[in-house]
Length: 314
Image 1 (cartoon, rainbow, N blue to C red):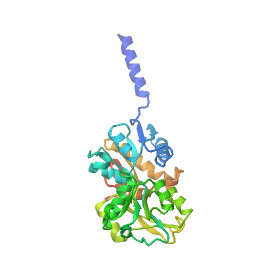
Image 2 (cartoon, rainbow, N blue to C red):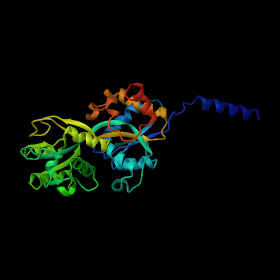
Image 3 (cartoon, rainbow, N blue to C red):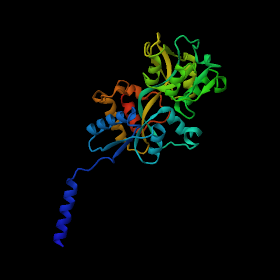
Image 4 (spheres, rainbow, N blue to C red):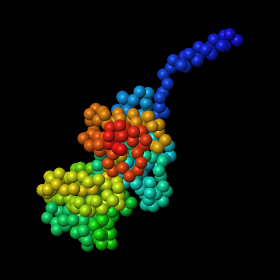
């Protein structure tokens, strides 16, 4: 009996001496390997593992924003990168995106960088505003795509609907080809700057982007809180002689709402206080100040705590 008691005490002491893992493993679901989300997720993973003791993080590729929300909802990942408009659609139970199912098991950590709604026309086109698209041949993106929803919303605040234009449902590359063949008057692209499809068009003919007026931007934000204004500099594309303000959505870092507050606090703090260690091109946008913009859902309490500490939230 004494031997058993001694053995039990030894095991107890041994277990007490072992370092305990403070957190469960965290999986980040991103996007395609060749896209932006996946490599950026890898850099975020490195920051967290280098600066948060006993945290094991992995990165997985995925089908993108909607897929990431579904994976987090199904407990197949804890953290993900998504467009903020898709976050909005999930919380609303949008019929086209989520078949009417409300998904609110995720919350925001913070915005990372902008993805801009770009309406492309020829540099010498008489289309100066979104309202001027009336009666024109316009590619609004594939039905159900992010660009499609963006196009419908921009038309709406400009007093138009799809029935007021001649809509074409084309991919970005298809839009570029049709535009070059003079089969389109304009096309919508939702992407970062510069966009390859637009760059390809601009290498062959001068183009410009159509922006929103201050009043239109305000009306858009009032109805769809995920939009933020972004300035596109002159000369971004060949033919652009002046800067233009366009609406943009944010790529947002989200997580499951049940992640521990202290863990998410540390993840938020480490990300924004160590951006200088990142090498990805999008690092220029990543900041705590930008993180609190364009969020259509609640923040995780851990992220909210960090933003309040540094004076960005009340």
